[in-house]
Length: 227
Figure (cartoon, rainbow, N blue to C red):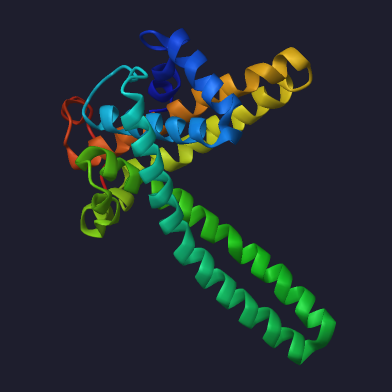
């Protein structure tokens, strides 16, 4: 899976795609380019789930913008609930510990609450790609919250592997980014490297979805790991 993911962004007209994607990330602070990039990521998930072996071209920019906006809404909804619950638990934990143990108890409770935030981030990171893939595949924002359809995907070995391997790519991307950032010219190349890495990661999630659901021709050609 990791070899397929790393080679995927370099297929077809890779230079043109990478330049466009890198420029979008370079100006992501303007928000509109970031939304278009998110829309492209949704398209990567969609075409991968459909069995396409090459990344999609940057076409129909209006649809990319709409898909990116909807993807952002989906991600925010998935993030809000666990974050709000975490904040409530953290407030109760810190407040109660401070009342019982004074400053020392409050400090330990604050440290513990910070550690508890890591599982929250991991949970969001784990579920959101599956939700976005189902949204991309079905073309409906409601599909992102179809937990009956998402459950067999997120509980599968294929999807777990698709979560772990991207962490490797993320580390590689971070190292390359750090090395490039040493020089000004290298710093300019950082968004293009990040685009390549993000497309590779989303490819893995799309493949895991396809292998688990059997919706694509790709899934029939590649045996999935047992759930």
